Amino acid sequence: MLLLGFFLGLAVGIGFWIWQQVQLKRYLGRLLRPLTSHSYKMGLLLIPGLRQEIEMVKQQRQDLQQSLQTYQDLLDFAPVGYLQVDEENQLLWCNRQAQEILYLQWQPEQVRLLLELVRSYELDHLIEQTRDRQKPQTGEWVFHPSCDDAAEMPAIKSLALRASSLPLPNGQVGVFLENRQPLLDINKIRDRSFSDLAHELRTPLTSIRLVAETLQTRLEPPLNRWVNRLMQEVDRLINLVQSWLDLTQMEANPTMQLQAKAVELRSLIASVWETLEPLAQRQHLSLSYSGPENLWIKADQARIYQVFLNLLDNSIKYSPPRTSIYVEAKILSIKDNDAASPILEINLIDSGVGFSEADLPHVFERFYRGDKARTHSPQDGNSIGAIVGNGLGLAIVEQILIAHGGSIKAMNHPETGGAWMQLQFSEVMANSLSQDYS
Image 1 (cartoon, rainbow, N blue to C red):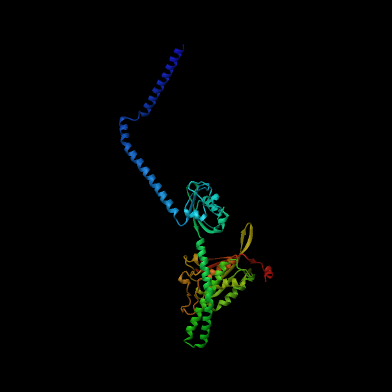
Image 2 (spheres, rainbow, N blue to C red):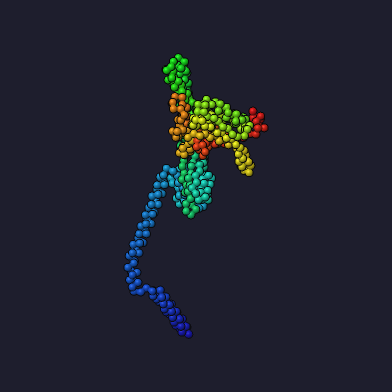
């Protein structure tokens, strides 16, 4: 019986195997049935072409990898920093310059959050802003590096950084970093050197002026004409030196000590115009003021007087004869945190040549002279006696307004075509409070 059972099981197993082989052949037959002898031969002919295509794809892949490595090498030796993060703000790659700027201890195989490697919330916020808006963003801030070793802390200095970020596919963001600290240090050294030079120039210039004054009383025409011209040039140099010293002091100390008190705006402007009226009369110019009566601001009267003196002087120099210079004052209500605060806006408009579009972004930069039409007095053909600016007036005006918490903007007026200076003050006072600051 055992032997019979064994042979019976063996027969069943062999039969099942034969059935599987038959089914497999049928399946292969159905699969290969469409492939005729002709198509089989064609397939054999296509195999070399497929191999060639595969080799071309491999070569293209190698070329792309080589190009990618070349670009990475270029970025690695670039003079600006570059880093790239994924959609979760994990650092994917950064070049050497970025590691030096941010004091990064990073290896290519590391996958860590950028904020864990660099304690800069400004950088993290810029990246998130770029990803949310899907537009390139820029930002500037002072970076304070962190250090675990207390002994190295004195050698680590804060840096002024500028970053430009751009969105990349799959939520990634690339950031270019620029270390602006060396440029700022050079500017400080330059300003200090110029200030020292200006201080040294004041004494000899004053001496030269005294000598010129003495000669002026002793010489007769036509010789005194040259002394008069010498006096004008010396005065211009003294004014340039003093303006440079004032501007340097203001920029070094933006929150300068102001002798703030109540100043009535219309009376101040009238006083400035009275000083400049001899110049205005030569061109038959008039001043037109419009705005609220009895308007008071809290300001340093001498400094604000200097602001309007510079602005009105420029308007007089560049206004055509028999025109008006307009000063318009109005109170604006600006909402700030659901609270309305009054803002004084003053528009000073002339009918002169205005600013060129190329000059407008630079008119408040020191020593910027811009278009020749606005660097010479067009009303006076004689160079002797013409008032020529030193390129510091508007820079000084801007610094004074910043110290007062205000601002200034330069434009061209659409109706007159002349210069349009728009000033804003936040220290507006009610008339009833004027006595408290007198």
